[in-house]
Length: 458
Length: 155
Image (cartoon, rainbow over the protein chains, first blue to last red):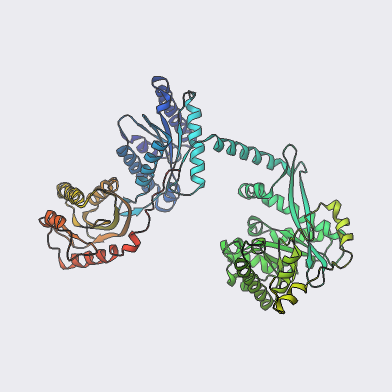
């Protein structure tokens, strides 16, 4: 055993040579795995792929010499915990691969992997500095049908990806569902790249009403994706991917322009609310994009409401504050979306120039018991009071029944949105919605309130 | 002039199962093994233990401390190690090996353990006593150590 390889890597060398070395590390592991597969019963063998997750960042902070020493110590720790019959190999990108042989079951391999994670995550003392690194492990058990060492390693890698996404110290055993999910995701990413160009996105519009006067006051623009083969794809599925890939900036800009253009066709009192991703708002040119969208559509800034989630404020408060202030002074309305789902720092509400607070649907849905409902309403009431004090409109989302509306109204909420008033519709259906809202809604708002104040138990 | 002496303080969770006599025996083994190894590297220090935790101070030249610390890290008889302090020191707090029992009932430790380990105990210096009492106070926060281990489990 020995890590002379690390010594070799210590010397700086051209990128193409490093690539060559990475490639040969993988190749030599695969060939040693291949020889094991032919030699013995493959079912008693497991491939572990181990990643030291913070070593790269460590190198950037404390220097590469320290990072490499950690890698070296990590290799020695692994070696010290393995049996003579197991094989340890160094892999590129701060990874190690192990052939466990023999191994009886996935549980067995899992127990060993847990022990290795524990060892690797213990502090390292290097040149007088105490350093820590996280470790994740993906496991692929060889079955009778596994004869391809490259596929085994690839699947261990998939299990590793899955482990890494569930936080430091995780161990995952490969299952076909992991591969299915990763392949499906990969295809979704490819399709998402093309979707904007191929006009597969649509903006749908959900009505927002003023509860007291019971008239339509605005629409929330919602992004929809009609996939050519899979049909409508849930935003919950593709928006996170669009965020991760950065595609959301382009898509979000398109939504902004489309929604503004649609707003130009609507009556002048209707406000268009558009969701904006953290990536968009952090972009220095976001204010300019908004100005552009407004001027192309020819609508005043006051008809646009930008919705952001509170997460944005927590991550980068100062630069975001600047952008929000710019938008606000332009006359654009600002809404804090999903209040009640995240950390809900109330202090943020006072610091940022919001016009609207959107109370998340999770605070509206009916709870199983009277007590739970009462507690939930107390929170809604508190937010509504807060909104009033800060001069902000409170809008409740997810209103599905008249009862929920009546409750929200008596709790002090100003506006509402939800299936009670209609789902999001395509641009083509907007005229129908406008027609339906041409008169007052006439939902009785006082009934239960009166009964309750009269002491009648509902 | 900076000193060549380096000190590291840590706590960890005892993973040894089995009864008290077994634990006492193991700890005795640990001690005699560390004495043997540490003398060669000119490293001294102190070990505190009870049935739940270990707390240790290592002192000596950096290379020696690093080597021993790494050996200790590879030992699966303990886990959840937390480094409390580390850095250069001017003089040793523990010129000779010391150890102490730091159970909740420190005045009346398990008689078997006490008897087995009595011979190993050396009186630490005044500064060493301060470090030991600091460690003891820390590890006596038994509520903190009673929390579930941080180790992850296989799916």
